[in-house]
Amino acid sequence: MVSAATIDAISDPRAALGKLYGESGRAEGEEFSDLVVKHFAGLFKDEALFSEIPNLSLTQPPESHAKGSLVRFRGMVQDTLPQEVYIGTITSENGIEQPGGWGLADAIEFREDETQFDYTKLKERTPLWVVSVPGESEWVNQTLEGSQDVPDIVPAREDLSTSRSHKFPTNERHIGIQAKVYDSSSSTYKPTDVVTFVGVIAFDSPSSSAFDAPETSERVPTIHVLFSRPHENTIAPFRYPMIARDDSRNDSEVWSEDRVREVRDDLIKWIADEGLCGDRDAAEWVLAVAVSRVHSRSTMILPPSLTITSFPPPFTNPDTSSPEPTLRKLLALVVPLTAHIDLPLNLTSWAKVSTTTPSTQPPGELPANGASGPLYFAPRSVSEDLHAGVLQLPKGTILTVSETRIEEGRLTATATENLDTLRNLVRSQKLRYKFPFSGFEFPTDIPTIVLSEGGKGSKSVFIPDTDILARLQPTAGHTDPYRSTFEVPSAERLAAFRKLICGARVGTVKVSEDISKHVQTDFVNERKEFGSGPSGVTPEELAVRMNVARLTALSYHAHEVTSDIWNKVKVLDRRRKAWLQGR
Image 1 (cartoon, rainbow, N blue to C red):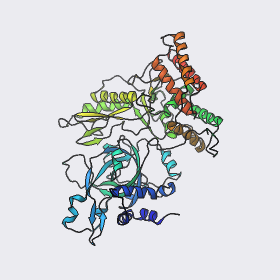
Image 2 (tube, rainbow, N blue to C red):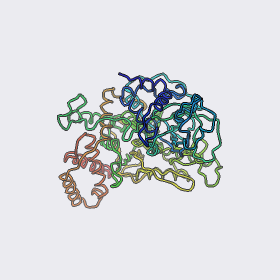
Image 3 (cartoon, one colour):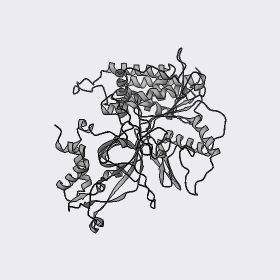
Image 4 (tube, rainbow, N blue to C red):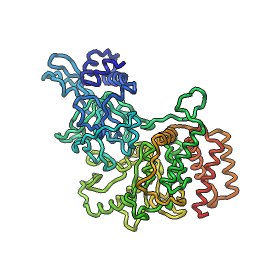
């Protein structure tokens, strides 16, 4: 049964706040803002009730919601702004004290006397700029909302829903809002965090980092946050392992080992046939990257970066209408977050812009990022406003980089800077944010696949130090990796693929002492057989091979790396090296 308090919170959240303030019996030292979080999060802890909160999205933009109504918004934190003060308590005309935050000050007729400016009543809140989750696959919202129905799109006003477009990493339509957080959780939010904010919608003046920012008549969608739900590991949670390790799970979601192998084999075949010219070995490497994440920064167990070389350019097929590789489209159907960079195309546009647009920036300030200037991969502060970079993406994004249309030319300073940013991300999983006189690196988690036109044994032109270099081996009848039409599996098959991949991304596996000894013995034997030549294995290659073995075990939803899994990866890696050498 739905409680009256829950109904009141949905129908009139501001009245529910006032009622809570009047009835609250706060413990000594407890802030009302903390009580608000506890109260409203408790009201909507049930998922069915939580789903009743109106959703804010491109299909239901801010302007389609009445001011003062309760909404929720799943977005990426793009910028954290300095704290601002607000009047914590306001006395209404009838002498009743009411909380002054959460937009209530605009809805209360309060007394015009000096008591409302009592400095002891001032509180602090933290404004954030939050945008639609970049690169989020269409199926994610359907999965989280538990429905396949897509509501009719309400036309979004350009001045609200897509305001401040420079704070979004792509030129796609999106929602941009400011979220004002009143409780202590605000200190935990960092750029690129994905969070669902629940609160009271308003249309307020934008907050600013600049101390002397002038007043403005601009209004932006604003959520006065009541509580939030961070999505720490993945925005599309699936269980791991799908295989039951004991008899405690006997529900329909439990898979047998045979079922896991069947789904995995089907997934590999689909990726290979539809996106990789039939090359199943390449599909194995892609799957390893797709299920990877930062496992440990202290021991540098990072997602392996992959370059698939001998990848044909799109102009080899004159009927191709889109240069985007089919592989990216396939990944978007089975992983929650994807992004694609057409590197030579972007480098060309940077060169054109940088040679035709003179710099008008004041000394000590960085140029803007957008249509009026070059595109930058790294976020940068411009006039104390953080502009999104192309690589300001949420953790867990699978990035594909295409460099299959390289032509001779000169790299501009901007292009060189962007390549350095991309290489650093691939190498260390860190993204450097640029400020006028300094820069700071933020940790990220973006597994990367580079598609390169280079011939056998050739490394990526722009990102030469990826962990894995695999040569594409097309099979008969599979020659076009840029098809605009391809097989889309049934809903049942896609659901199984997502469970396999997304579950594996949050899982963990063990490496037993026996397997460790087996791996060491294999390494010694290979060194004796092949030495340090091209067919041999270096300690660095052994570390990558071990990382891939762990990821392969995850893709089988196993609880540990077995000798069979290790041998499978070893054979796969040997075959990869032989093909690079043309054997």
